[in-house]
Image (cartoon, rainbow, N blue to C red; front, side, top):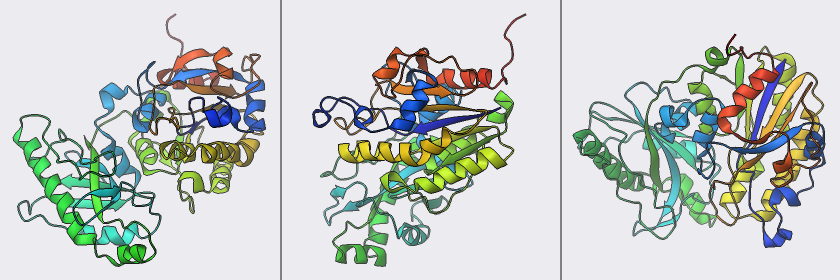
Length: 412
């Protein structure tokens, strides 16, 4: 028996006036998700615990059965591994934004207009960076999807106990990175990052990619802003933990990185793009091919667009993206036989908040011999009445392994 955990990143939301006090999921036309709800068991889920606002990283770790309070050191290492950087013990990794700064150093666009093309060419220049005060520190940049990138620092005397440079909102300069403890390693790392941010602007502000973006009235990607420092963690392989043969299908470097750290096979996809423009047909075809033709028996799947729309405050786009996933992806996945599907989100990204929240997310499980409840609609409100009641992310793998007959009895 095979199992799928399909995470629609950031799908959960709060009632909106423009949708007559419905959430985007409630307002969306989702006949296929509703059919799954009618034929399955439903509930709501706190990815970590009630009221705890999860990151996508900590939420996915919890959903995969890891304790994020034990294994999470920061987002950077997962992002770096996800985009193919061979991080090693001792490395300090960061996730970064390609951002736009003016001549006074003020950040005018944290995501450089959500740049889609040209970041590889910019990174080629950044990878020639050497800091005069720290010639022995190796600096590794790698582009991720869209406006995202990763940074890895490699060398002696480094620490992940440093703050972020991200100002969080436009109209401010990058924050000064400071040491979060009194160690010399943290103070050194903070100084490296402050010098690196300043030097990144000088190195790429006149890059041809940016000159062309300015000419086209697009925000240039002329500065790098690191955040999410983390030391490379060690985690138990998912296949050993649950005795499965697992694979990860995702469009973002972060989720692929979590899959790599968990020892999952990463299924590469072409022409995905990411966000609300993601190639859902490609994702659908990849899922179907893997489920039908591969030796993998457990799949973690992440689809990202609803989260991006939530962060950008785009209510209509979020609703429409949910409808598109229902129409393109769920319509075909629901036809799979002898497969358990766990459909959920990793967290809510309410339009009104423009960020993650601690609101629980909706859950459906379909498959052979599932105890079907009387819920017939997939939404944050409707599934709260379902037979699963309220679970936590740490329950997901135990529930799936039990349904798939991979679990072991506890006790005599």
